[in-house]
Length: 356
Image 1: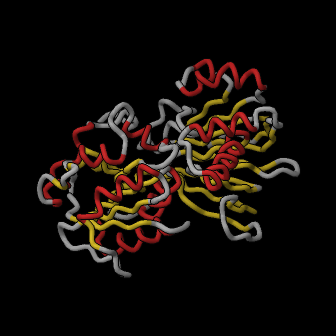
Image 2 (image 1 turned 180 degrees about the horizontal axis):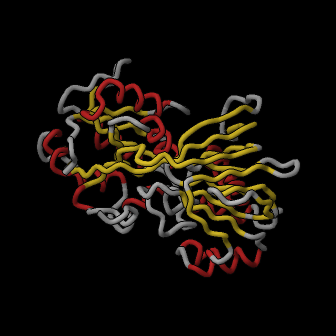
């Protein structure tokens, strides 16, 4: 049971996927339309569909400011939407529960692992059936939730621009939070391609990322950056793949940090040597499994911070919770216990937590 149970809920859903529309149909009869002030009475569940970038964070922030620990925010979407909500709730008393209905859902892989992790299945584990809640919402949340603090990553980028933004802007400094993983290099270029493909043709789930790998398989995979990890001396590296991890998975199921703990106050950084096409073909499957054979390509470090600067004309190719970003400089710091994460009590303590 949580230390203090919320008694009302706001479901923020990105409606673009088929699974999201199933979730909307399930919850629509029990939700009232949202007004401008996001009014949610005790025992009520409200459903908010996002329309564009920034909507999820704005809704979560406004509702949290009004209701604090009395509110549970359910983030229904993929890693981008979930990370946006997590950033908006950073440092607040409002807990967040993940309802995975997006394409990659990599953070959900970390926290739910072998447990059912479809958004509707997670709701059913809370006590919400296809015919509605089994009991009063406040009772369900009071008895069926676990809530624990987890870390976030604070991200500062200089001379940066979001590649998926609909509004063109001059490069500027960007500050945000990351819930899951920041990738750097070849895999970020793949994710940027996958995001463009999804916007144009619709999501194929994790297969979209695979298409990106195939599309860019013979592209240049050599990048250079100056890196400082924690208190180590700064050095220049040639690399192909890099990841700064709060959690374990990214890219539709690849595991750069299979043993990552989301409440240890440390980030797990991975920087590979320059890889070849044969490396990718030979090790892609084992990288998905988090196998040491694939991870042996990487310099693996745990630390409270990570800093990278682009060397040469090319910027750093980044994704932050799956959202594409170009930048000249990246700095990442751990924000210990910045988010209160909720999940169904019947799932037990996730393996990504340090043992209590």
